[in-house]
Image (cartoon, rainbow, N blue to C red; front, side):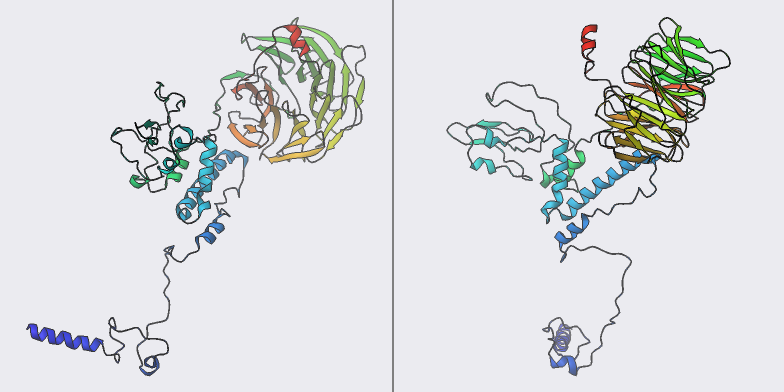
Length: 569
């Protein structure tokens, strides 16, 4: 039987070696060459030339130009999540973009890191910036007794060699021991990438209590024994501390009822003075809420069916100017609860007021701005008549002696002092301009917001007359105010969410969105310490929000005299 099998095997081998049977396997025959006459003489069965494509593409790195592929990925084809951009989800969109960017960075490093050196540049750059450029010198360059050869002992990804004198030294230790009779130092595994206890260089054996470092779930240096599917740089990038956004309370810490608080876009009925007293106009009365005692007192009650249409405290917070629906302007001494002066000049309601030391400016529905010097007998010293409709926004920049006015004619004017000719006229808004605010941090920066048909916040450089930013908020802009303590901006809005938005300037990125009012948030004011804002709406409530951080340089003058000299320009 074995003989028959061997004969059959030899016969089969002979059949394999016969080139006249191309249909059978030819494993033991040299491959046919293109010019071989057998290709043309022997009619063999050919395979089907139709290529069958699968629905799955299995990538293969063999034969691919990785440098070219990496260059193509620099275009960062990320999901277009801003196609339906809306201010309501701006914060969520930014978080999603950051997550996509992090994933793309790690993916590039893992795909191309072994062949393209630039693939890991984003990883190392991000880690370096998050660690504050924490670059420490190697032990061989900073410690006495080390030679040039010892500087190349430790290599990334290689575990340290054990020493008889230091058999169980931790991997994160960076100390070195001098061996007697040897000029070179035997250093344990040392690297800049491992957070370790900083130590003095003068005395090696001086006791120093270790500082608590950030806990790490694995030793990033031991790549040979790492269980992570990603490389060391990617691990460090993912574990590096991320800058967290400042936490802002989403709910107000106090809510006050404000019955008869008018739902009129053009009025200004809430103002918080420097004496920590909040003035609120409700119908024909003005009420004062004391922030220190939480008490509420009524300042005045207008007669002859007159209504309160605007409020504004003088800079020191002792006197309150009140505008009425009949065109009168009254000045009240809040400490004495007494009206000390009533001024005329407007034929229609006074919808906005602004103080500049002893100058009080009033804007009216009669389309005029009257500037009043309260030290003299005359009711006003001059008149601005450039607006074509009701003036609903007035703000003085006391430091630069400039007045900004916004009206229902969609115009924003900037006036240089009491000069009746405007310095600038900005016509880019397409709705009424009530929201106006001067930056306390940068000279000449003015922010303005448009109404329902505009929905934008624009910032202007009044030194050059140029527009800096134009941000679509998605809803009616009712008020703007700057933080005293940080370069941030708060805006209040109407339809559709009646929200309050905190912006970071100059990036104009949203920090937080606060909701709670059921009507448009028409009124906004800032506390004297610059930490709290109060908002009022047609839902007849006042809400107090902790929005801004404390002033780090909150050093008050040691005397009244020093405080007065500090205000001299």
